[in-house]
Image (cartoon, rainbow, N blue to C red; front, side, top):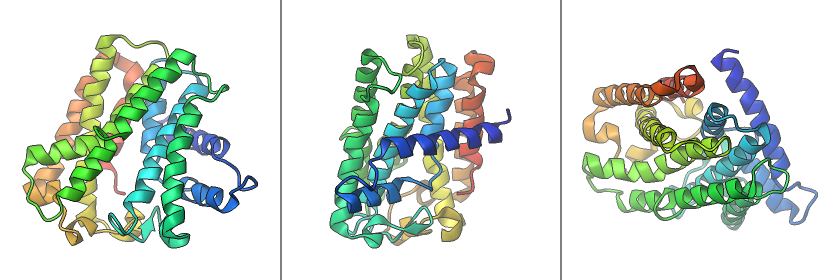
Length: 295
């Protein structure tokens, strides 16, 4: 199976699993559940679920287990986007090629949708039929909780908001992005691996190095695309970092240097998993996808 075929098949599985783990619109409160499904289904790159599946395959995780972990991570990610788009933060009107949740519905509903998706993620991780043992469920709940909290994604977003209009140093910018974007991507790799045969400390260390490189590359490319791609291609508002006077890799080191940094991080990702050999093929291909993506 080629990487493209694997990716399409995996995305189909993820979409079906998300349908399963999200509350239906026949359950009250129907409008809120409709908004949750509007936010999550039928769009997005599904970067985190793809990473979960790639790492899960490496460690022989079951389909059920990686689907539960994938859905949990995607729900946390989408909740962060719903809140990030609200007027109190980025005040954006476009996400995944359609109106943001607070535009399509209203601000109160968007706030509750984010809250509910966060809870739903942990419901998915602890479901009785998800293929994870009790010990695995506990380990994955901790991984996701740490990655999405104040020392991870939420903390990174706080730093981002505090940095508007300030000139950050490159190390400060890297710290912000390792939390805001990198923490969930690292969790995706670790949770995929932990959903399978218990990885060794050496395996987890290698996967951590891989995830650190891929996570930072993803953000560097995001910064590049914000100034080189249009809104139709991105599915979100282009140029909003400059509009909000946010520090980015492009604003700090320039466009050409940012492109070289992304390529260098891709090489670091490959080097981190070379000892896995052919078993790490999907992770290696995914690193290439991140560096070369156009949206």
